[in-house]
Length: 115
Length: 110
Image 1 (cartoon, each protein chain N blue to C red):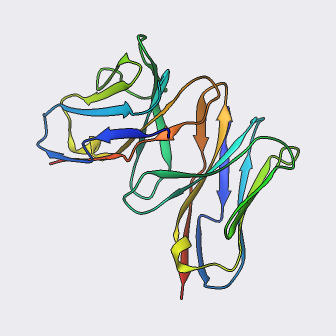
Image 2: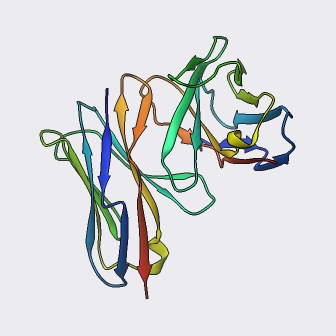
């Protein structure tokens, strides 16, 4: 149980393109979803936390206009990287839980490469 | 604000040997997680430690938590090549936020 599906697993696109990444909880209702970014050989950094039906809470230093997060239902959150540039290339990982203090279940990650 | 520090950051060891990864955290965290990450992959949950003195074991891995020392350890017994990966510990800040350590890249050589 507690499966989180992330799609796509890999994206390669040109600079200036907007890219949407989906995160779905397949067998539970995700009251909260989390978006992380991981640079090569580095740790995970939380970008934002989103609750269903509410605006996302962004961590300090994360541009909310660059990284648009939508959590429209209890099973789906999306991260849109707008007007992506090479410096946005990274590994993006989502996670979800079913309530406060519940364990987070991680998706398989999306490797984004901007040319 | 919670800060989590792991050491060592890199560990190369031989099969059959034992070793310990240390995870120190700066402020109170009511739980401590350990994760494994293989190259190019996402995180795999290994352990969650919820109270002082908690010890959990799975195969050759054993994790423990000392909340008074703000220290968790991940002990590897008789290492095998399949355990080569990056291991992260993470503390819990507030009600929802995971704060990760830098990761320990473990390489086990035959």
